[in-house]
Length: 300
Image (cartoon, rainbow, N blue to C red; front, side, top):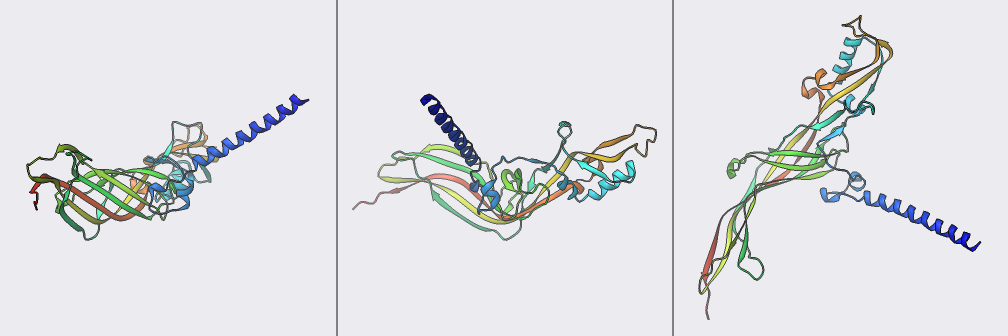
């Protein structure tokens, strides 16, 4: 009897521990991703997902495309009038998927007056040594706000490749960058592009002189904006109430279900595209012309 009672208590404790483990796992998965954003939102607090170039297309996405009326006309011209249902990404046709993907690269366009400074800055040596880690090159960091979203692929987290433009007044060539963003209002994101390199050197030693390492640093803040294009590709499955043949092949077999490829019906990519608008500031930083400055030590 005592053993039976102990067994029951042990089993109850195991169930409680199992329940705690499930709740704890859910809490871990729901960790907020606010490190990606400049302000909080419901999506940022509750959504944890991997950023990607494409999202899975659904029926609402398709019907929101600018070219959807052309799809309806293609269906009626090909198989005749009549109502039909739309199916996308059915589980038994995994080789015929439909997606909404970023059209890379995403352009960034300067949109306002820039503000620039240039000065020599000190590069401090490592602690208790004369070794200096010098950073050379160009870095562009953009801070952006989403100002217009699309109903298609709403609240999806995307990874985009951005094309930072030529900056003529700084003699800088175009450079590629990356950024993650939500297709949702009141969100912000950051892009980073860099060709910075590091070189380790040692401060010059000059008798009776104090030496410091300096480098010329230029910084420009440039108001900019852009549009992120998402384009739909893949298969749509059309199902009619009754079996029918194609109008152009009246002697062909009758079927209730047919598949069409979006990009073959909507050849103009703008007909199957939606856009996300963003604006903000990109900060271009250059570091060039490193050298040591040595000055005589003052003596009393």
